[in-house]
Length: 210
Image 1 (cartoon, helix red, strand yellow):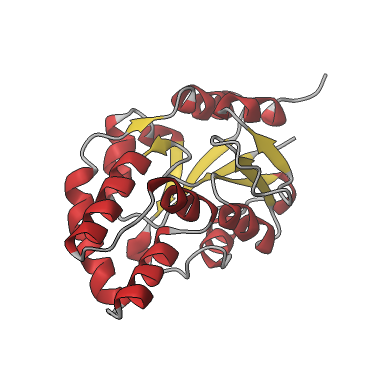
Image 2 (cartoon, one colour):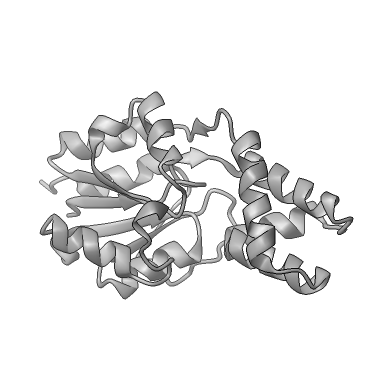
């Protein structure tokens, strides 16, 4: 039985990828860089936005740091009203109702907390780790290790839930379970301890077996 969930934000609790894709496509357009939407989407879902921007930089011979700064400027405008995935709030509440705990571990800034607050999630979370804390990026386990130690979580009953392979690997690198939210059915994290296609599918793992 699981007792603690460490959640990714983008693409896991909230469907933010429309805004992310708009920002990346606008960034590419500003530099007249042709991109194929589906290939770009698959890249950021199977790897990361950071990798996509690094590839942009290599192609354009422009600093990825410069491109990243511009991307974030654009994305603050395109990411105005993201919506949680179906069943997200009910799933987090069900974990609390079973005596469990929810935590957030995201590369997004504290805007993620604002979205959680607007959606009614924030009271269900024990702590939110965001980019402001400057932990190493997933799949490095540093931020997860912090949460495990800070809240005295049992690694054997703690799971990292995310929509990308790096979320799963980050959890496993920290000695906890990794759950892959395969919302796109890309089947790109076969190493995951748990694979779900809808968020409520994780709830039974938190319930005491009779």
